[in-house]
Image (cartoon, rainbow, N blue to C red; front, side, top):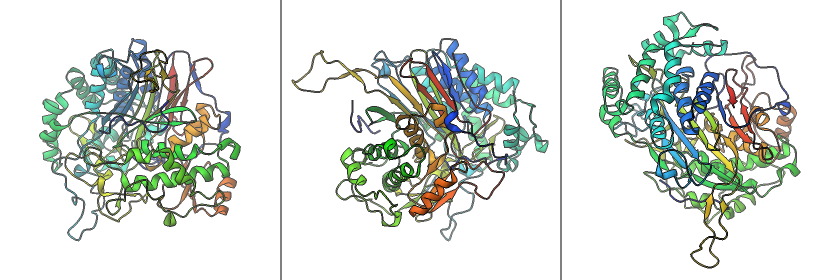
Length: 623
């Protein structure tokens, strides 16, 4: 077992996912501890949309592995969940083979090592550090969020096609068939989905208004939504995915951008490539934590949080979501987010102190600064000296928002995929590439726009995330997989007496985790993991449990509306500044994130799916 962080190589954050497009009535409170997971003996797919989940299960039944199913789900969500599912955005895929034989066609996984695919968007060549500032140096409202200047070069098509080509068993055409069918024949809208399509972000752009809103004759619950232009685009991608970056589709995208004052050119598209990165590896209570490296900030922050908390017996301190537990967990959040603020950015252009951040003795030093009775003011928080280099630059803001989506998959062989991808804000930039039928991201907003100017969520960070051509913006997306430690060959050849045995195969799979939610992604993943590993909740209860969040700045402890009011008041009495999500909006659910989780029953080996009930059209299913 690797006791802290194993870094072999270092090669979205998106804001709280509240009901951002249409107000829907707050759900009747449920006892999350009484929730039960979906069970399947062999394979499991969990996503935010039932049609996308069904697409993944269909591919598994056809002999596909977890990666084949993931590619099918990813393209299907581009059709049925246009707020975040996409071919015009980007994301991260974490793949964990179940054995030393590896998975799929690529030799990189033949020895059973996990891989992290970075298909995050890139800044176009025309991007510049001050592109969203006016002549006086002030941020131009909405410039990095809405419209043609907001988009980075999309990575989703390249990422999903790369995953299929290297790690799948089937063909791209076969795994894309469900998505093409859903776009061509349509899918039936629920009331929640129909209301979401009324987003004003779509109304202001003619193609988006036409496709998603029927020019103002808004779709209603029970109607079938067809997207023939998107079906045609997906068909072309299935036949030749390189055309999106080098061929006919690339030419159409570049022509559309030029005609609409966009930044993305044919050269930008041709320059884009998927990057294989080595996942970060930590440990928590004897379990291996496989998680996301930069340009994700979430993985290293999660490892820091868990390292700090590993020194406490949380169940002895109090039950799940109790004030005493919330206190210690919040103080771990605060310290990890301080380090995230100062040190993280694109690893291809910055040297990041990841190994130092993940050391257990650094967590020990942080732990000594936590008062057991009261909070540490963020303004007074001092990093333990001698463990990390001094932050090199002044602080810069980080902007990320809410429309990301996550899905988790385990196949019958035990191979696992944890995938998070995004458009950034709901429906991205709002711009649909006409006549190709897909929405473009607004990921340029994830870069720093102006020093010392916190965004709407108060997040700040270093100049390592400055806008520059070819750079990838920092993200909080944190696909994560938890397992038993690798199994080692105690009797095989060892190079030197007393040396550590070489792991020969992965340990047993335990959890597949991830969520959208912007700055809350890392805390959501941590909450889910702690609820299962420390507090013994089943995976469905963990997905539905009310969430809490602290991100160092602003110095506010945030709670979902469903969180126990006495517990919130208890935290306020301890000295925390507290805030309940959408507290004064009676129609808002006051929620964030969307956990789509899988656990493995340690006794029976049965797969347990937890589909987040904050949305009402998701599904956990398997066979």
